[in-house]
Image (cartoon, rainbow, N blue to C red):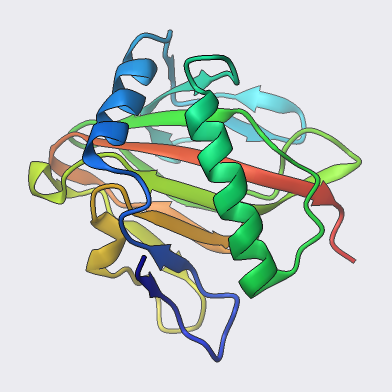
Length: 196
């Protein structure tokens, strides 16, 4: 496993290569494509809502924890516990339902944070994005972050098939517009008591 991160600054995203095999990414895609999709929903304090203006354009569905998805939940839960213990040390109490996301040509998700989860007792603390698409199959659709005054940035290894990018849920990030092809990803949030 290769990890890319800035050891001096633990608020930056961490990227881990080869966490999911090509076969596993195909299996996740098959599970996602069987689900009913919602278009463009975002979450806010008042609950799910349509995006404002040009905020988001994509299709999402949710993969409940069941016999078919257990291997994904198990792998991500163990992986996140190891990463959290090594790098972040957040008080984590659970995992939200997996979100399968599809970005087609011209789809995108503007700058946002992932903090909100709808539960007043818990908040999202760590976010994960699993890249399910070979980077040769799409252009654009980059996972980009703002962590300083230098503006949005990304790196090529965020796009590697089966790679996992982990970051604190309060980081500002976006998915840039897909210029060509289709980008598929799995997103999951780990929750815990409010940050003190």
